[in-house]
Length: 315
Image (cartoon, rainbow, N blue to C red):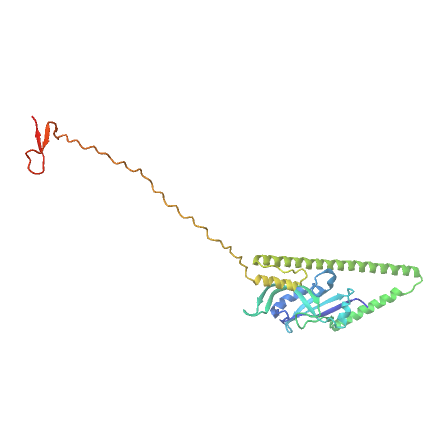
């Protein structure tokens, strides 16, 4: 029994998820083509050992408003194929980035992702979006396709009979068979190596995108002035949600330093200019040039009635 199976199912459908994301029909229609070619992981863990398959086709159905997909899953030693066969795993979850996220209403906590781009599809026992599925690929064939399949089968059967026909030169036939066998084995090995390289490249791309998202988240936190959370083990969806949440927060203002008022220095009073005290001016009695010379005068009280004096001049 081959350890690789073809699968199909519903990746996401219109409605509100358990983590309060509302997927609308118009956005899912744009999202559907981005899922084609993306890897299938287990539980959104973007590491190489968790890559178990690939999406080969995806499309949007406007009647059912859901995104369907086709692809394949290969057994990785953990029993994943058996779990899908016995329906222990029956649902999936998308891993995507949104160009932006808007609120359904001003006061609502329901967020609507806009311009989504698929990163991966994961098997999970508990998906966020109700109504998803994973199972064996169910493909309906037209009458012409069935005829082509039968013709190819008959042609291969005839070739096989011719190939196994025993001729006289048994040794040559055996050698030819071995050569064909070796050719098939070489081609199979080359295809296997090519697939492993492709899976490794996808895993490295996912890891690079995750690191870029975490770096973007840390930058937003630095601008907003908040402490970033550790997101190394988070899924792409959780990192995108953290970025959108951080971007919606206001910038944290730093507390202004309270400066004590500077002690005022009393203004110096202007110094009064000291003027030297003026020395009292000694005035000499003005000399009355017209005054008479009192020489030869005699002062006496004789012959004076009452208080008084008399001046006499001798000639």
